[in-house]
Structures are given as structure tokens and as C-alpha cells.
Length: 355
Image (cartoon, rainbow, N blue to C red; front, top):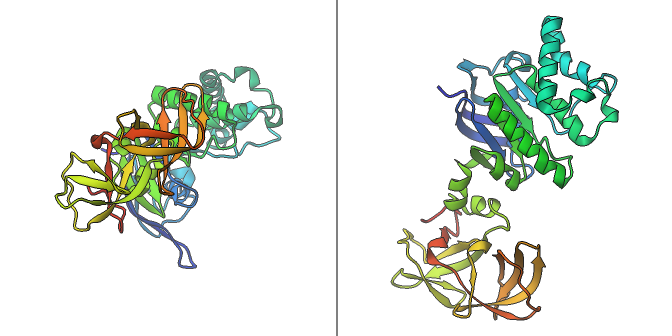
């Protein structure tokens, strides 16, 4: 049985604004689900509805076999970790972690055992007597996680927990969170706007767009078979290139701004024009390439190069990703090709995949 079930979840505010449009989701026990999307897409609102911090306009939320729509957050057997840590500044780390258990009437000896176990797991045993102001951002976030862990909830909810941390610390913390979740085997819903964070942590992703669950699947599924142009552009870094194109009369070739390219997929389409997508890492540079790209800017990152170009004779921007440094001058022409199996085809009007 699924551990968390969302059935037709909708959220409409009193002013008529509809923030969530009928989201359906089944989360298996022990699964790590990431809700990802740009700011304002509804991912945090959806998480808060699961937590009981936002009312549900219609639909049902089930946790561990119970419908929880009318239950208070404290009755849902969930623990939430916030972006801003939400620690009590006047309490020590130990008291912050123990506070929820104390309010539940947990015996003192059990509180001590749970706090010490969580502190050991999070490597903050030497911080238990400190106050939040004496801690770094990463330490504060680990304390917030410890406060959630000691409750031994059915479900962990994380709302942008790493947003306030610097880049290096974010990498360390996301590894720690994923390892902890695997070790504890606790069902987890995690919200982020960072698609790299989402791809590296999730068992499955829910890509949110304008209050809709645009696509649900594993990171590999979303990368390889995006259901819409939005998902294709959001998943992957640098983002997928998109060029308006059209099919040749026989349907076996497409035009890339006047350059005919063979395709290997039979595409179901009613319109001649469509949007052609291809990822920067799938562009191959070689003397035999028939696509001519004019170099604008090169970002050499050591192990790879991000090359910003445009198609010769047009203003169409194309980004290329190479796994080794490239030394070229602005204005230099590069010959390129794209293996046809790496093409993606999207309806120009609806944005839906045609493949």
C-alpha cells in the first residue's frame, strides 16, 4: 500500500486564485520524492497541504492509510524541516531537539536516548550545549533535521532546506540528507527549485508548473523522455536547446533553419511546424559536421566547456557542452552534428512531446 496518497488535490484562495490544479500522486513506503519547479509553481503550497499548514479546497490526502484532511499537523505523524531552520534562539541544541518530544509527554530517559542517537547520526554530539547563534548555517540545519528525526515520524517533509547555504555546503548537506533517508528508510517529500539537487537526490521527481504536476518519473525518465517542452527545458544543465522547425515532405527529415537533418523516429504530427529540442551535451563538434555554429562566449570550467554560439546567418542561440576544454575565438565557426536519436520533438502550440 502506498504510504502517502494525494487524490485530486486542489487549492483555491478566497480571491479566486487557483494555486494547485488536481494533483494525483502515490508515494511508496521509504520512497524519496522531490517536488521541483520554478518559484511560484505551487510546490511548497502542495507540501504545506500535506503537512496540514494549508487547507485543501478539494481532494484527499492519505498518510499511512489514514485520510488526514481534517487532522491538525501534530496529528498527522509527520516532521517538517524548514528553509529558515525555525530553531528557538534561547534554547540549547539539546533542548531544541527535545522540545517536541517533551510536549508529547515522552519519558525523560527516552528523550535523552533519542536526542543522543540523532546527534550521533548527524555528528553534532559536541554541539548539544550550544545555542543557535553559536552555530554555522550547516550546523543549524543539522539541528533542525535532528529535531525531526527524534520524533520518528511516518513521513519527513523538507521545504527548501538548503537554500540558505553556500554552494559547497549544499553539496555536503544533500549527500547527508540522502544517506540519512536511506539509512532510516523513512518516506520523504522534499521541495526544491534546484534541478541539480532534485536529480541527485530523488527516487522520483514531480515537476511542478503553474500548479500542475507536469510529469512524474525517475530522474532518468525525465531526462531521456520529457513529456513536455517545459520539463525538457527545466531538467538538465545547461538547459535543452529549442529551435522552431518543420518536417520535410516525406517526414524523414527536419529543417534546422534551412539545414536538413535526417531523423530516425516516426513522429505523429498534424502540423508541419514544431519545436525541435536537443541537449547541449549531445552536440558533436567535428570537421564533418554540417551545422555551422558561430562562437559567442566560451566558459572553460576545467573538466568541461560550455560554448555559447549562434547558428551561422541567424540569431538562433545554441549552447554546446563539451567534456574537455575548448580553445576558440569569438566569431570562430565550429562544425557540428547532432545524432538523430537525441532529437526531441514538441508540439508548437501545446508544448507536448510528439515522440
